[in-house]
Image 1 (spheres, protein in one colour):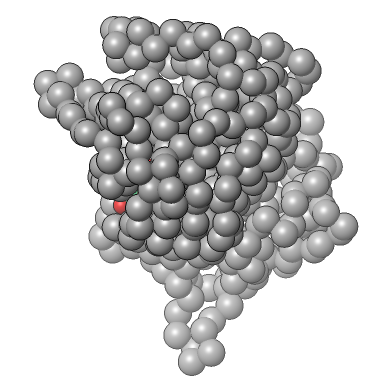
Image 2: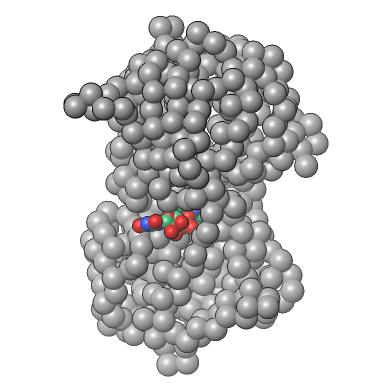
Length: 437
Ligand SMILES: CC(=O)N[C@H]1[C@@H](OP(=O)(O)OP(=O)(O)OC[C@H]2O[C@@H](n3ccc(=O)[nH]c3=O)[C@H](O)[C@@H]2O)O[C@H](CO)[C@@H](O)[C@@H]1O
Ligand SMILES: C=C(OP(=O)(O)O)C(=O)O
């Protein structure tokens, strides 16, 4: 278990460039299994989860070449599907959430896909019903080995297009079903589809490869099946969750930070949601400038004067992956705010650590926390903590950088799942952060 030691209370300054989006990269990497031709991908983040998925692809027989930083080519012309039945796969496949998305491509192209219960953050129940109901509707047979927690879908006569209404707009579920449906005979309609930029990017890439998907960006997708796909080149968007994390970091440390090349048009409601906490977000071309908040930031209130509420919702709502950052930023705001995590039931428990540090938070129930901001009249105090999940981890790191004294964060592998080379990138803007193995 590695740790960060952080000397807090220093202002930061400079610019930071976001990495490629973790959750998009995980989808796009699975899509390379859909063609025997070469697929080139640029801007792949060098993070734990992505590297684990690349290892799985390599063990499946995908020929992988590194062409530059974040730039790889993949060729899935001679796959070793036997790996899917190996003990090695049962271990490696369960090491991250994103591995679930190899099932759709394999089912579509080869008529069979398997996966052990995938890993990822322990932030509440993470059901896979949407994924498998979708495959079953396309004609696949489903089996589950409860003992081994091993899922499988198979079809002998191929998949057939159909209409489906998803029970929930699952992000990885939608991606998985799309990738299977691309090879189904006839037409598929997916209603209540997730429509995050991650999904939009996946659909655009698949269309470049020869798929026929329309409705991209909406929750109603139409797919006309094709027999095979060709290669393509794709570039992963900047990571909106990382961008939001840096906005929060700048505000909490009262620092001036420029976030470079953010792809504004793909940030959706994220900037407006930070503005609800009173944070000044300036658009400079395709960069974001967060000026120094010398006089703090003040929480807005609703038109009727009632207390501000920030909650998550499927896209184009506010992503649940930034609510923990929002919560930590609120601890120094002027005013109070209710943070409501609707999707996951175990993502707010890390507030105990913030309370230890002196933050004023009432955890109302597993989904809701009321934060009463300090308005920088009282600094958080340094402490020792363990990162329970990726986004709580980055939030505790932001808290530590703003706190008085030296904090230690253990289990930073959680942070490394989603943030590339974070210590060196933060050191470059003046943060006093050191890694201990
Ligand atoms: C690898 C990856 O891409 N992970 C992301 C993906 O996970 P993932 O695809 O696993 O998450 P899902 O979209 O399936 O669902 C997330 C949670 O929200 C609930 N839910 C979802 C949709 C809905 O309409 N109603 C509802 O209540 C689900 O029951 C679940 O508890 O999407 C999540 C939700 O944005 C993000 O937190 C994860 O970072
Ligand atoms: C919850 C997350 O990731 P995963 O789905 O990979 O656990 C996240 O990125 O915030």
